Length: 310
Length: 311
Image 1: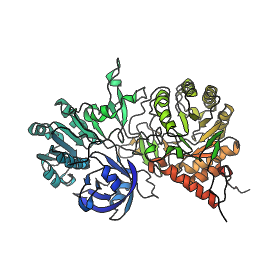
Image 2: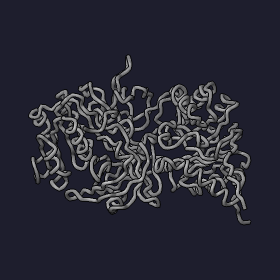
Image 3: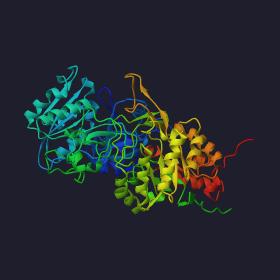
Image 4: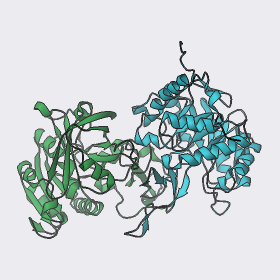
């Protein structure tokens, strides 16, 4: 993780609502792993002082675009509106790559990637890397309507089997990703699920995976002030192993999405409510091994020390 | 005319600091997080995230929302407790030659004193900042910092536990008379004051009609509050000119540091700006040297309270 400046190489549009910026920042690009994110500062005199975090959508490895990173976003407020107005050759200030990314399976595995709306972004970088390492990639992608499916053409190219869902039925199956998830897992012989999207979707995906005892890694997107582990605003309630005699319901810690995540074991997140009073909790248990990796089943997992691709 | 390099070394309540720039509590973790971007030994000091007697889980989310030129936070002092600080964070910080200011918090006077007791025997803590902007469980959850009596009780207890350690009381600006609270802290033995903690604020999502924070209210920080910090520092420095002040509140640049010092701060802590640019503290140090050279100021002490007022 470092702070660097980046030059915008291209600004593109995807579908009805998404903007993409391809950024030249070799120091950051070379280190980025799927599931990690970058934080971008808006202009210096802005009343919006905080950086905006974006997961890495693509990392380009070869040719003239080597080590460029691409982010995608929709306009949610003044900050993203400003970024959507940037054009080629603008310079931006970036911190990254940040966080624990997706854990790659060590042996050949059938991987199912599940994305909702713009949340599907980090799954493309992940799909590239999984395929490079020889894993099978299947895809379920959903959105409210067809124009909000993120780059469906690339999904078809990357996936052995893919399913699209839209809530209005304008493309693929009418409904949500969770309506077709179990069926797709069955059909594809899925051994690990990777998901990113809104919380209710991640909660439902995690539940289905837990019922089927399939490891599930989810990348969460939380509000954050600093994006490097200091401010403690972006936390997720995560179960840890209870200590002797401890009620498992109390064995919950608030883990930082930025540096303990953003990828967590979906089965360890407390999706529905959590304690509201400050209570004693021993966070020493909160190691990478039992947050991001624990119970993924594929115990011969690699982590961020894995060489990038190929 | 040949100009000599500005001397940034600064005295603070008997401590010799390499410069007058610290990082504020809760904005640089226990140093590790910020150390990705800054060499901690280059800072005047690191005020670590507040520590409590036992680990605190903190409040549910959302804990933060951005506001014009600032942000609100309601974290609930999530921390691993003083024992963890002493066994893990402190040795790590000392290995990196950081000047460590321990921020302590609690919900009762006894909790503050017990944390202070543990720090007495921990080698290497340079000073203690007492975060009295905590709910007082023994007085209807009102903040200690809102009452001169509660402020005096905490500071008196901590000072008794740490007679040889510089102790700074971090005051809340959410009071009618800041000088009354400052007087209580000073009379109770505070060696210095930290001004200011965040301002209590609230933000509502009008579509859902819910507070933007799970904790309903939160602390406002960032450049939005800087004029209030400048006023508060000036007011307290005018009343107690010999009490050193750690100025904090919305500092983004070197000139902001100078502004707080002119108001009466002996040193300044960079807070929310660390989130915006984690290298702010070191950039600010270079900028102070430039200012001092430009104005032919030999020592940072010349800046303290040096604002010129009419009449």
